[in-house]
Length: 221
Length: 177
Image (cartoon, rainbow over all chains, first blue to last red; front, top):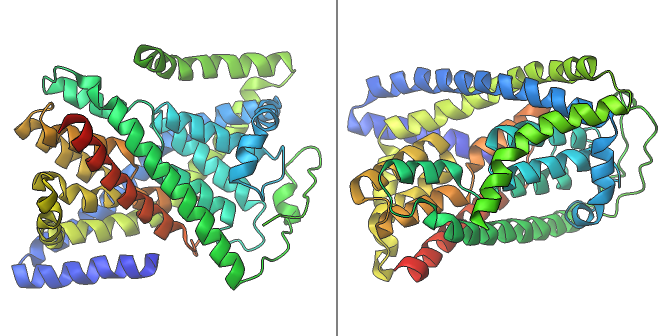
């Protein structure tokens, strides 16, 4: 699907540019877009380097594992096939709480780290696991308590009640998140029906970094 | 309640970066070395995302510059007008999942021209704040670990965008309309 969307955007763009006589703009847009991609990635370097450093301290101190155990039952519902106490759970929880507090530049590194941890449980490295899809669904819906950027913009343009959108945003984001979870659950079921799950086997090179052995109980699917 | 949440928001990061190393130190973790060791991965992860992000940004940029995005935005605008929904906010439904900066710019423009406390301004703010840029999240998260087959993730993301978009409009129409 992503292949199709990508191709469609380019081909449709080409056709529209041909009709509108915007070929020069299109050429400029290509290099503009490429530059943008690099700029955004470079912007991510600082937050990624910093947060992955902090989170490694938390992991080495056993803090992530502790949080994972504490809040495990909540996550176990959403991520049934991630073993209890696995560091991925700790990162998933950090990612979710950062999203909730609207800390975008902390949420992304933690989400990426959670993805990397989930990848160690993935038997098929170039295909997403159900847990990865769930994490993605939660992040695209991105449940937020405080839409800080928008409150700031509304304040700039002289709103009498800049935070007036907090309630409506919270309600809308909750609905979107519930829809994401429901759709994810349904898709997971449908995918299971179509193709029986392969037994998860963690590659030795992936689990080598971990101190202390983790047990991998058979996935419940 | 709101004050409490924003207080937590502003304290969260300072407390974390103080408490985590402090706790780790009491657990005899060599905190600085541990930090550097983990931070190393950050650079390579960001670099790994570049090809994905460049590819996606080019496609979106082409789609916008060609006038195709404007055309489709104009196309969906009349669809919901019958329900009394201001046509100005409808293009956001298409813009929001594609580009975060693009939709933020569009929202800001709506707030500037119609005022932050107008129905249009309120709905636009709510739409902008209630979901994240699905295509960006997908590109970055899957790109970072080299997932090529995202299975149903994109469909789920876009579905929740549509639901969030409609919910934002309905909730605002009830609350402010």
